[in-house]
Image (cartoon, rainbow, N blue to C red; front, side, top):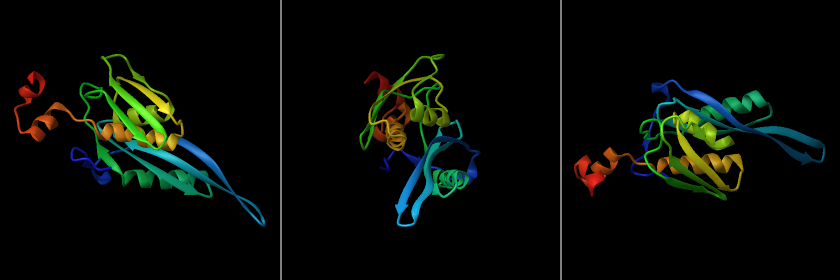
Length: 172
């Protein structure tokens, strides 16, 4: 879902912090018994507008997390942040997960649950009101949150896209 306003970022250029969103133990039942493996979803970000997510699967937890971090560094996007919050209200969807992001005044904090909170804190948003509707599956909630963030556009981007002065964006 690459939009025109989404800019890809190279992970080598920035210092990223990683957050583990969820770990799941997956069991494969075979004739010889059960085989356990682990699936982890990880979010990385520089807390200055760059964020990415990744999925890692392995027989051991630490290896799975490391693979998730490597995968997340390959899927980085740049998100517009205005005064520590999102530029405008936005809904995001992925699978059965629906999320709603709304700008908040300074000092509000990140009002969001679980998987959404990890994404919003990693991207560097400090004040936002967020609601997760539908599925609470962490994989889909993370992807729905990133979908909403990818659709965000700041005033400068809108002005460039329309080919008008930035003051005209607000005055109509």
